Length: 183
Image (tube, rainbow, N blue to C red):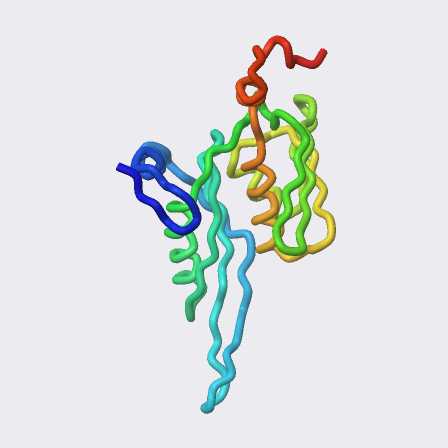
């Protein structure tokens, strides 16, 4: 049974896979940023909070979301609940990523480069949280342009979602993986 939405077809198996990921894995969460916002109304100012949260299992599953509420704990709870529903699977090769990639979202650009084992996680605050939750231990990152944590997290997730394996590329080109291997 196919369910078609405006953004493209979503199959029932995709939905089942997401719910299976949510049920079978124990996702940890990390608060990346809390923003205090005010709304000016007739009687004065109303105070609110926006929380940015990243969730992941440390084994290649990561997601993020923003939650808004009048109190900080409620904003965090909302963000965690949303993030658990929006997780993606990341291709990890050993302790790093398979190839260099550039993630872009809004004004943020994040460059992700694979690193040799033992290098460690070279990343700034918002991008570091995404990489740790995904389970990547050796990577070089550079955030270019914007320093907005919301945009940086989106750009990092965009970069991770672009990762492909040698097998996938070989299949697209109609070749065997051995023909594409770089020495």
